[in-house]
Image (tube, rainbow, N blue to C red; front, side, top):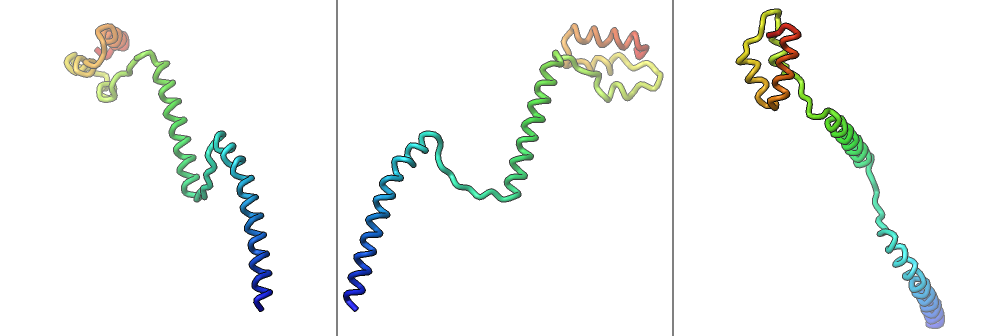
Length: 121
């Protein structure tokens, strides 16, 4: 029985030596691939992939909106509260002045001239 044990231990030692040699040969390849990028094994759940897709869509929408806003040249529209009040009667000038306070002087003049042409003032 001791002979079988010795033989098994000798086989085990040979296998371990072969495994150590294989690992030593693999180490340089692993470190070389680390220079390209780290090896990361992840398991992605369907929820994570869905959230990643939604995030990518949201970032794309934000980029499109920023591009649209930059092409707008700072032009602003008439506030809804002021535009919705038009029922055929002239709008009070104090309401117009209050609504246009965030605009520059040139923009206020342009808006007021458009309101005059439209007959709202």
